[in-house]
Every structure is written in structure tokens, then in C-alpha cells.
Image 1 (cartoon, rainbow, N blue to C red):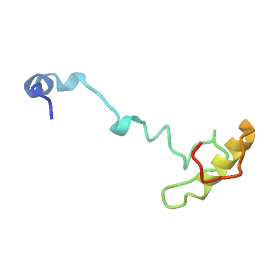
Image 2 (cartoon, helix red, strand yellow):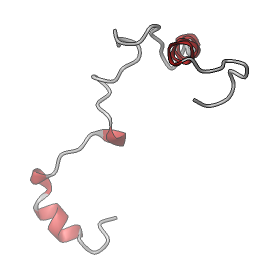
Image 3 (cartoon, rainbow, N blue to C red):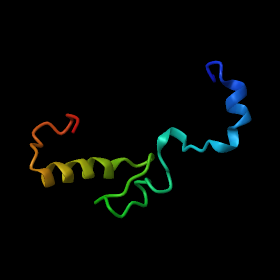
Image 4 (cartoon, rainbow, N blue to C red):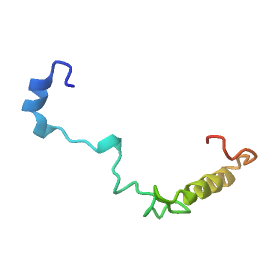
Length: 70
């Protein structure tokens, strides 16, 4: 998967750091995030819908069709 750069990437692997899927799951965890109105987990997504509704109200957006993406 190195597109011809496998040797170079392997040689310098200690120089590269990354976060899986581009996010820090400790910092961006909706189960513990105090900056969102409702906490939620993958097992209980009820809070996610509540946050969407709260954000719509805060921004003055219509909630006529709550199934529509933000």
C-alpha cells in the first residue's frame, strides 16, 4: 500500500504518527463530551437525535423533516 514507497516509508516509520480514521477518540467521545447537550454511545443513539434537534433549534432551522441531514 505504499505506492512504490514501501522501503522509504518503512525506513522512516518512526517519524510518522497518526490517529486512526483521523480523529482522537479520547477527545471526541460523545459518551463523555460535556460540550454537547446529550451524551450517547454506539449502543444508545438516542442522545444523537436529541443533539440534532437542539442544534436545529439553536440555529433557528426548521425541524419539519427531522430525518433530513443537517
